[in-house]
Length: 328
Ligand code: NDP
Image (cartoon, rainbow, N blue to C red):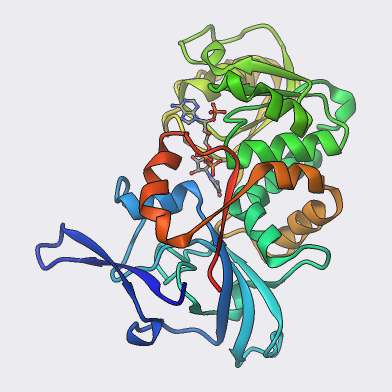
């Protein structure tokens, strides 16, 4: 695919149109590094940008794609030389700056990382922001003292991108992982990734008691809403929830009880503006500990031309794991 997917806004300020354009016709915006994009992926946020279901696109024209992997073709940044393999996750790319659904991207070198040794560009995109965010969540649990010895750790939205990687990484680190999903037919997949137990997400869908049974030492939550409220009420004394998502809702109808009576910590995780040192830790964790067989099981490849078909399916929770697009 040698074309860029460009979304434009009509003169009425409302109507969006998307076309495949030659990147030479597009103003690629400011940046001191130019990258030939080889692989990209689709995250929840990309699906929102493509469908327009939520205002994640902050300027037009926009090329979505918050993640990409490729090769430097020009650089005024001393940290990057022509020919270097690089990856990019977040920093507003695909939202406020043109993104990875294009063969060429121009960005700030401050946003780039060298491709981790031991992972290919396609593997980095299979991991993408979803896997990197899962790693940030795992680091958050570790840094706040939740090791495998503390007890079971719950992952919500387990069949999705973040959830699949969270299950796999936690299992590789020796945690006893409980996977919560609305797709019980994916139980074998989740067990293969390393979950010891798969539970129905409906357990968390109705308003519950402010404090429930202490079931989990920690949790990684990609879902938010009533689910997160119920998860918080079921965390054991001194436990931690790393919250990164809102697939169910951005609301949080909880009480202070888990915090003031059980010393539970609700730890927020943002991937977009995470600083370089924490990104490097997350990618090192993924490189060293992510099970490659799990990565293969999580990943599907797809054609970039199909993004408009795929995006609504992803938002409906009908895409299992992660998609990689070859942009070469
Ligand atoms: P996916 O769409 O791949 O996965 C989301 C999963 O959430 C679904 O697969 C489904 O899992 C579950 N889910 C969906 N709808 C509902 C619902 N109504 N109630 C309960 N569960 C639901 O998305 P990602 O994994 O890529 O992202 C997950 C969330 O994390 C998103 O909200 C995304 O915006 C956020 N995110 C945040 C980041 C950050 O920096 N903080 C970075 C990356 C993502 P199942 O079928 O197993 O139940």
